[in-house]
Length: 185
Image (cartoon, rainbow, N blue to C red; front, side):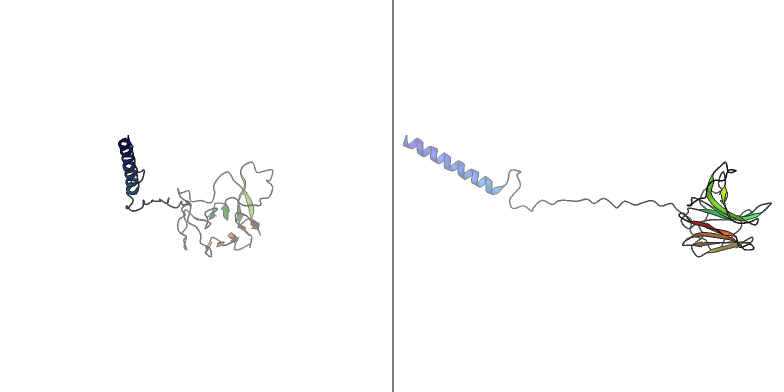
């Protein structure tokens, strides 16, 4: 019996020794205790970008297209032109501006989305069923850069930081149009 106890002690001691050796050699995942620590890879998503409307580059000279000069405001919000018609010549810009006076009773279509000045009087808001001051191309007309002026057919149109201004050179009547303000003179 003493011998049996001694054998059990030997088996127990051997088992403890094996567990100790195994614990020193690795971990539960099987990684070697002497190996390099695991590395973590972090992927950063590329920054998101906002797509802005593509405007043609500003021009400094404008040639008449079918007797008219067409251009846009630097931000592309207004389409403008100096147009010679059979009965009159006018300069105007179309686009959303605020404030707009009340719609007159005789205007049954789109009201207040533009201002024009003609050789027949003071500038006025437009009652129009569609685009008037555009060359009709597939892209927006070239912007008139801030500080640039078009002088044609008795009118002067200027691009400023405060909007587009057009004046009848003979009468002095005209307008200034911007998204959040406008004036008629």
